[in-house]
Length: 159
Image 1: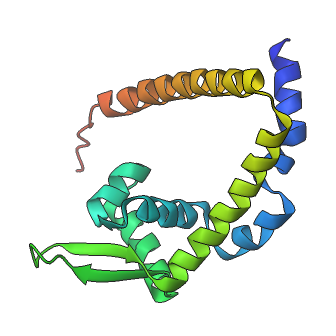
Image 2 (image 1 turned 135 degrees about the vertical axis):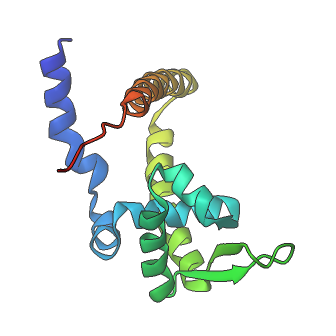
């Protein structure tokens, strides 16, 4: 299969993959960064700001802006660490937990529907292919990050 055909297949099916009917409400209410932040915090139960920024590969100010919006809308809570009062810990609020559970439910329904039509051999193959694709993407991303950190700062003389 040539690249143009693969691209065409992906493009024609992207809407089905990224914007199924059940996701439209999520997409209208949250940015993708906010959804990822909620899922990230759900994974760790509690997290500090620097870990959010690091995991999402964004600046601290961007992470603070995302968290601030989610705190303001009562999806997240901020509190001080019990062990070190200087550290601010971010956790899901009850409203945030409800949202994440709803989102996971939608995703799990799709995974189950796909899983139900695959036999064991197809499941193994799809996981193998998915892992290969993710390895290629991770390698490509790593190369791009290396190139961006290799750039030297240029000193501009202002007269």
